[in-house]
Length: 479
Image (tube, one colour):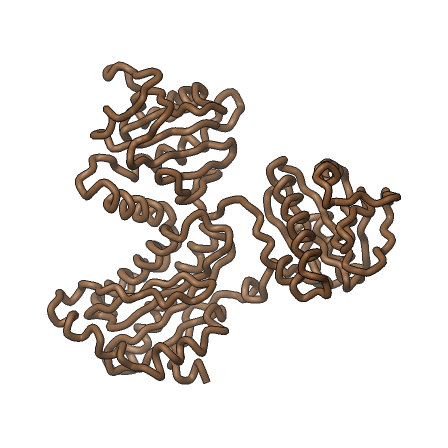
């Protein structure tokens, strides 16, 4: 191939993988972006492919690492010469704030890094890093195969990589903790967890814990009930295992499996290594020992931990003219109320009135206002949030009203797909510039509205995806 054809093929491969990563991470972790840094040979320019501006703001560190110092062009040459053409040599994590990264050198691709966002509500970064590692293998394989044998499936494969990423991370941890020769197989475990999560028993979602252990560690268990070997329920019999989960609902005991059958019911101490599925109704969590790996709901895995982060609210409060103590307690009050609403599975609206004298809002006006710094009053406010309408919270940390009605003039920035609560709050925030409105939906999303704009939505999320993206030389990109 000519140089132009090779560059076009590289661009096509990188774009295909970026689309797959962005689509897959969006389903796994919420709206996500992806970017790449690629140099196909030691002599070629270092290219940046960042179609959604993920890397913007990190230009100084990129200049320092890769332009001011070009040792990276020579550091791994001798090592690569002693390896097979297709082998990859991992590169160190650049530790960029707010980003997850994975890089490697290989024969087909001398230098590559892949990036995505490190969301604040991840159960673990492990599966996402394994996902990025596989992107390295996909590009290496695509360029090694060449244009004539290019299948174009890397993007589609990475888009559906969630279960594989979870499995890869569990395998990595398991190998580190118990060695390479354990008979516990992870794919059947993950399949069983997803099937059980979708199986209702008499109309109820599953609750309880199912522990998966290395069969060699079975003698270490403290059995409450141990099933005879011939009568053990097989893990693939999902409905029967679902019935057995009722024995450990809302209890400290748990079912134990070796990955093939349910061995019995245990309590007390656990083995040195275990993988557990904690079922909490319509969702649950996968853990390695006590560490969360991912969550699951509606038949698929996710990285989110279902706890509100409210990063956008924290940023807005930092910009406001409030003393640090009041800012801290206001954020703490709102976070507690949002988390309570999510646990109770109801929606609510919180109006944070940052004016010195709170505005008048139609609804139940409290006189005197309730001091939310007192735990008893905060608990009452959480109950009042269930009533239709908004809670009116002042910068003085008092609740000034509840069941408040919000409205305003219609404008072009509304999103009719989000419902009446969201859009009425959006209109109100547009007409009251010193007010922040937090909207909690019953199906979990939290929106932070300020001056008619949803601060939890970024402009890049509305940008259409293109089929192929430009590869920009790093020297031009940082300029």
